[in-house]
Length: 332
Image 1 (cartoon, helix red, strand yellow):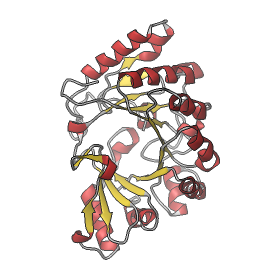
Image 2: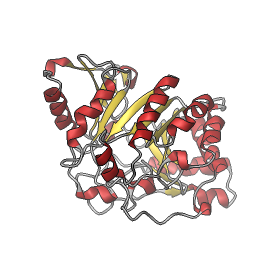
Image 3: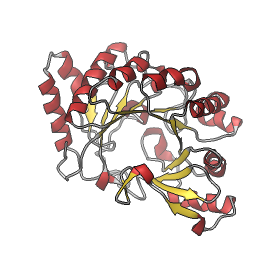
């Protein structure tokens, strides 16, 4: 699948639920959210059908997100369904880690190839303030349990000025003695996050260099499997750092846009195919499926969405055409 700007679309991000067991201040309001009814979201069978068809069309990587994907009943079966396909994609998940320790072995056996665990602070009190829950120990246990399975692990941190930016060196420590990639993601002004000040990748590197007594010469770009001919394939710029077993990654969607190599589309929990995170444009696959469409109808609808994929997002401009939904509704 190739969009109008020559980008090969091979990465599908699937939100399996809008529900979450945390209330992160930049994602959800503290009072909680209105829950969708069960009939509003795609069934496991519908998600499987869409993913399987997209794999036939060229998708090579599927990432399950939420909300919190481990809340969704049947998620292990869904992973098994996709891993059993003749053209099975690489199957990944992004989770807050609260429930992961209990299910990581089953997920790994079902075919999960990698897991991204969100962690914005290692301080128990700050974790409570940021998420509304005293569950930091559960997340740490999940990181340890996942590491023991041998599954590929990435830790995602969203540093926010004046909130958790002082935690950057402590989060980076997870990559010091273990083969874990730690990525610092620039905050995007979506929903509840719009009122906070982001920390750029440059700011992250400055803190790491200063905190660990390093120099710029101690940081070496290293993209490995994430690059092709020395050019990063994904959004993260990775660095090998002197004395670190793992890598530090920087994802700067605002200050260093990677739209020119964007290879993804999104499927929301309500069945909307979104070609771009910023824009509200989408195509309703749920209605199409429930109206009795054929597989070819789904493929044609997906190709229309890909044809409409814009050249770039407009987060730095906020021109009024952005999606008004919050991140948990779109899919992280």
